[in-house]
Amino acid sequence: MTSVDRGSVPVGGDRSVVPPGERGATRIADRVVAKIAAQAAREAVGPLPADAAGPHATVVVHHEAAHVRVHLELDYPTDVGGRCHRVRRHVTERVGALVGMEVPEVAVQVERLHLTEASGVAHGRTR
Image 1: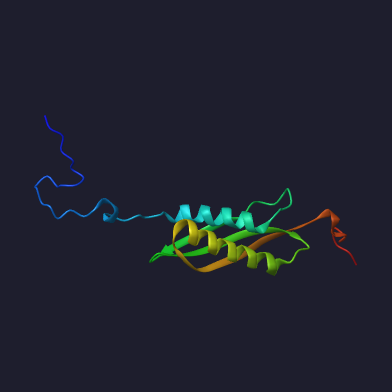
Image 2: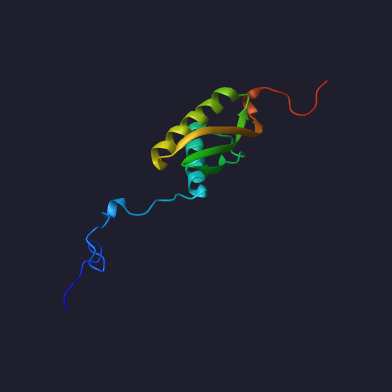
């Protein structure tokens, strides 16, 4: 019995074979891109209060472009705009580098602010 390499010559003997590196397509699921975006947001946002939930992301991929929405909880007081800007930039860079997709939009939604004990702001209602 002889061995036949079916990866290079089709069974019918047709020699017009597409090289292995040029066959098919790679499809990366939206949820995989969302996990990468959430990890990138975790890296960019920095330390969070102990009771804060970590960032999570939702992604819609359309025509090789990832539209990302990141949900965050931050400590208070903080530079909310500055931290959101860092998250947007880092998510765009990491998703582009790891997945090879264009990221035309990263919407950052701050879900909750956690008052830090060292902030000196009074707790509860004051008059």
